[in-house]
Length: 334
Image (cartoon, rainbow, N blue to C red; front, top):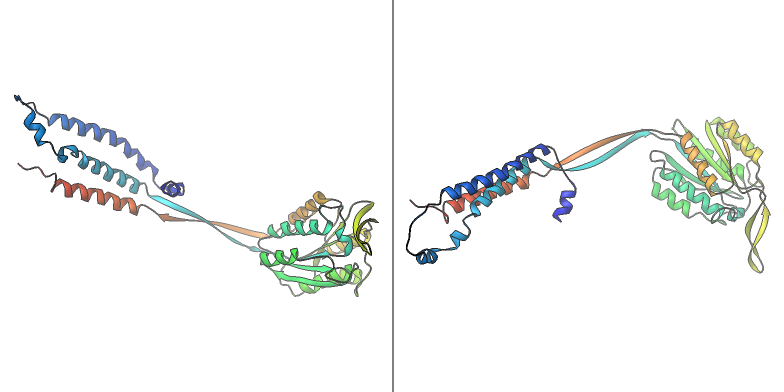
C-alpha cells in the first residue's frame, strides 16, 4: 500500500533530500560523544555492575533514533510531497455530421470481413471515437430511409444505435435519394458552420420517393458537403440469399453507380471514394477525418494535492516522544 502511494507522489523541492547527507555525520558525532562519556574505573569485580544492568541500558539509543526519525520526517515535509492530477478541458467548434448507411440485402456480401455491413459499422464506430467535439447522427436506408439517431454528442448512444443496425430493418432496395434527403432534413436547421454527410452504398438507386439529383440540390442549397463511398470489390461477390432450401451463397455482380456518386460529391464540395476491401475502407474514413478537422483547443490543467502534512505530524510526534522519554523514564539525575 505504501509502495502504491509513493508511485503517485512527486516532490516540489527534491533538493531538500540533500539534507539526508547530514545523517551519517550525526551518527558519527553521537558515537563519538558516547565514547567520550565513558570513563575508566579500577574495580576488583564487575559482578555488582552485572546486577545493575536494566532495560534502560538496552534502550539507551532510543532517544537518538527518535531524533533521527524526527529530522528525516522534517526533510520529507520540506521536500513537499504532492499528488498530481492531470485534467484536460476540450473546447472547440465542432462539425455536424450525418452518417448515411446502406443496409440493403447486398450489404451482407462477404467480399469484406466479416461482411460489408459489419465492416462499415466498425470503421464508422472508430470514426465516431475520433470526433470528440462533433455532433454526429445516423440515417439508414434500403428501399426507404429512417433516422436511427439524430445529431448527438453522446457517443455511447450513437454507437449503440449503430451496432443495432441489421439488414432487413427496412424494405429492401437502394433508395440513395431518400437516404440523402433524410440526412439533409436533419442538418438543414443546424447552426454549425460546417455540415457534412458521409453516404455509403454498394449499389445503384432503384427505389424511394426522392430522386438522388433532387436530394443533391437540396444539399447544395443548405451548404452541406457530401462525401460518397462506393463499397464493393471489383467483379463478383459472394452474397447470402434466402431460398426455399435455406440460406445459400450466390455470386452476384458488384454494380455501383459511380457516376452518380461522383456527381453528388463533386457538386456539393465533397469527394467520391471507392472501397474494395477493409483496409481501403479504413483509409477512406481516415482521409475524411483529416479533411474535416474541427477547431479544438485543449487546455491542460495540473492540480496538486499537498501530502506534507502527515510528515510534519510524524516529526512533531517523534520529537514529543523523545522529550517525554528524556525528562521522564530516561531522565538523568545529578
